[in-house]
Length: 632
Image (cartoon, rainbow, N blue to C red; front, top):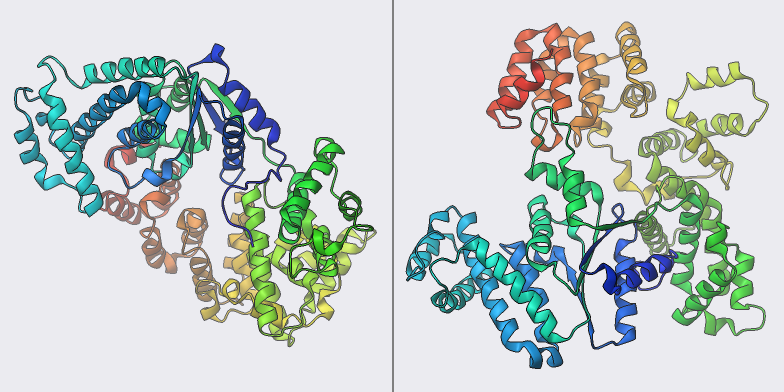
């Protein structure tokens, strides 16, 4: 199994990025500097940060200090700015050499942080007037005003009160002219002076997991860097998803009417002077990563590192080549070395080679669906090995190739996986319908008219290129295999959120899937709904209930589908209005308002009912609704 966190071993060939960022961070010529390491969720940003920190620690330069901050760890703290400043100052205080030189300056800065914490807490809790009180003796007023606002969490309450007591002494020393703005300026000046006095060449602050935080926390942390900490001899390396930052900026600084200015882009450029983007892994990269994860499970750490070194020396990653079993054998020298020394205890060579073979066959299909995301690759393999272990505990005789192939379909197209399940249920474990699909997929000379005939019988998703690729992947002839024990291990995936309770026939399920297919163009979807309406042999009520049940957890994704049905089926409109009202705030967008214009064209009363509901429940503001509504 693999932990869902940053790897300590570079199996993604990210060493060049770590080397680049390390060199930039240590360059005095571009200091102070904030580097943005941008990449999608699960793309390997944390791995790069770990490699950078490891390089810095390995050099053991006493004049270079690194501080690794996991921003998510401070999510529960009341003030992100002061939490970040405090962790940096505490790290410096823990360094005995630095403390000897600038201990008093660090204490002074810590006192200022406490002052900011008290002030920021007061503002956030609705008592800003306390901050503007004269500083002759403001502390009793602050305490009285904040008594009712202390956090309920006991630890936070203690920290807040301790900060207040420190701030009391600090405030006595302040002149009456000083205010928040002046204290920001003074903090920057004192922080910069402390850095000079410490004789440090560089303070490198590495911030990870910021994109897991709330939008407010993200902005607070970025503003703390810009306002307080970006002084000479400091370098920040921030790993984050650029889209998440953009969303956070837009939440705090919404676009004004029709302004063309991209606030989020300008904001990021002001904070981050040097953006470095981790590219999405190619399909070949993901395939190699899957094989290396299998190697990590079986090989001892020293031999895994030997394998990675050998692959780099052969420039496998640079050339974009796929790792072969022969290459693994050659680098590890399976022929002459003691195999027991190469593998971890409890593993055999035959099992290792079998699992390399299993994932070598299905990796191409898996990699094309993971969208270059290494974290998703880990999660897929973890699920596979959980199923494998469960089968061993229950003495099930599984073919690991079949297990892997079925899991790929489950992972990529859950509705087709469920359809395969219903086929095998009807035939005591044998999905006989798959035979026709497989044969027509494998026949390169098949007639187009025959394909069209088969397409009318099955869900159109079976004919998507990626699914066709899955059908052709070894092992073939799944229709000759008893699949019951494989589906037994996937019981949670078989449940279809209420659809299973409707006892739909295969034809009814096909209508549900065809109308709800995400890839379907809207014009074709409308045509499908019209055909559905005209077919009087169908139980329309059951199929509509099936469509509603299918997307209970994501109404935004299927609201257009329901509106099409609303237009075509007058008898179901009252029930569908109830479904419209289930849209949650986070699922709502201005585009949703435009979508409801179709309801307005059919029934103005229903439209008004829906509009009033969303405004009353504060799902959307009346001003936003009316601004979107006016042009139409």
